[in-house]
Image (tube, rainbow, N blue to C red; front, side, top):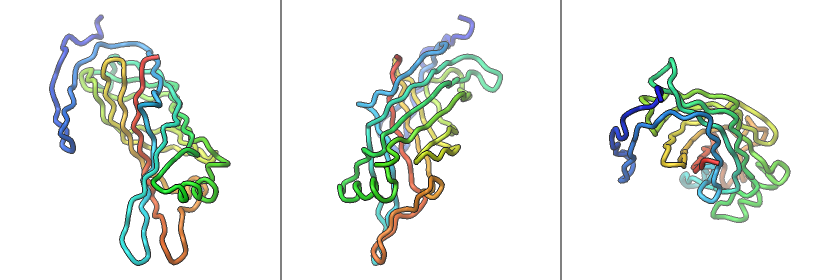
Length: 212
């Protein structure tokens, strides 16, 4: 295969934030391969800064694994770089009515009052087509991608900073973005004279996708 790389292992990169090491290998090119999100290994969540009137700031976290999605991935030569990842037909759906924090009263209030996920239970992230330059057929990429995020039936172009690693037949994806609740038609939660949630809200993505 003229597009294939001959090298099998390039380097071991030590992550600064972690004691683990990520092995980067050189991959052979491959054509359109469908990957499916493995919800039992995946999670999506929010990080909300909560300011108390008479004390400090804390970060509230909520997560869910009720995620379905798939996309098509291709790795080949390209003009922009040594190689490129081509992502097509990506659609990820999350049941945000199942978001859980460490407080069930908060979760119920978010569902009924603020996010109103009882009425709008689905968040959707879509990318029709995307090209990510990839150095020398590496198995790991770090980039910022932009897709269409829909919450409460309001759709906006939204960037996510991602790290993705291909390990065997699985693709591991970590992503982060920040949004303002008012972009999607609702105010951040607040309780008069007690506390308020501050924008922006962080969105976290930790996905495992497997060849279908």
